[in-house]
Length: 417
Image (tube, rainbow, N blue to C red):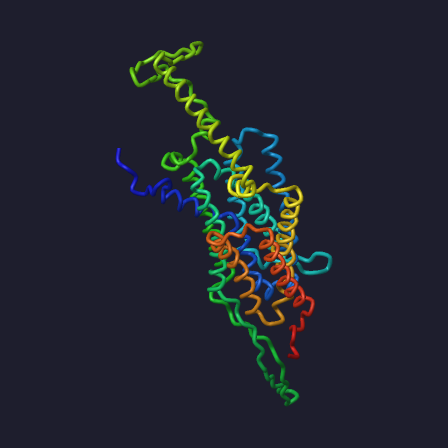
């Protein structure tokens, strides 16, 4: 049988690429929504408050992962997993498609105009994307571990791709123009300053069509990965065996170094393949192995008595204490609080005083920085507690500066300097 031309060591290039496309569907729509906010705030009644609405709605959508976690606990068999993945991806795709028609629609609530359609559909997008965190990884666990990196590459591209597209779209410019109005009746001329909006390179509707297309591609990739025999061969064997146990073959091949025999196996029979020569050889091998282990144990004991510190560092892994584990959990919670909650909600207030273009660049570059940081971490790994603490402190200091800019809004900070 010929070899697969797309097989590269333990990874199939086509399947690797399909997993990347599947991973892109995890967060591409929500990332697209956040990079499009600089355009939204110029047209929707919420204005600068829109990022705050988005952040709150996104956090409310975390009920999705909780619901999936309960399903994993209640239902031990994961038959519903495929249906859940399809539901999540189709929810995101249909929401993006509807947003292309209704993102500007407003209704009056409590005497004020609100972008009801946009906010409701954003909730469904958030619900779908938050759920992918606990739904897509179990599916990827059915494949060889070499494909896990491709999923994370796709997840990183889910922020990079819409950001690059948003940079190409632009944000448009709002300029002021002096307008003169001549009144024939009064024979007088009045002057006023009116805003002039310069359109973006392609419309918001077309941007949502793009997000919809990306999610459809992700759905197709998942279908190919799930149902084609070409992709199933890259799944791990223990996963397939746990779902469907094949009955034992009637004939089993038993071999040793002397003879090969074809043995009939019944359900009640116990196959005992042994010979005097094999037993003797096995006994000798066990004795030799036991002697080697004893010698190694004695050597390590002597080494420990003379150089205990060296053995501890080179042989035994560093144990994570309960206090350090709690410390790292607090850091993770703090970093996520800043990056996913506080800073996105305040981004409009911290950047819009400097103009729409500054806000647009801040929103898009923030999404690009995430996959760039993940790429850098492949080559530079930070494991030391002190280094992690220093990086957390630097990030907190930068976040504090951004919060200070938001507090000074709508006046630009350092405007007198």
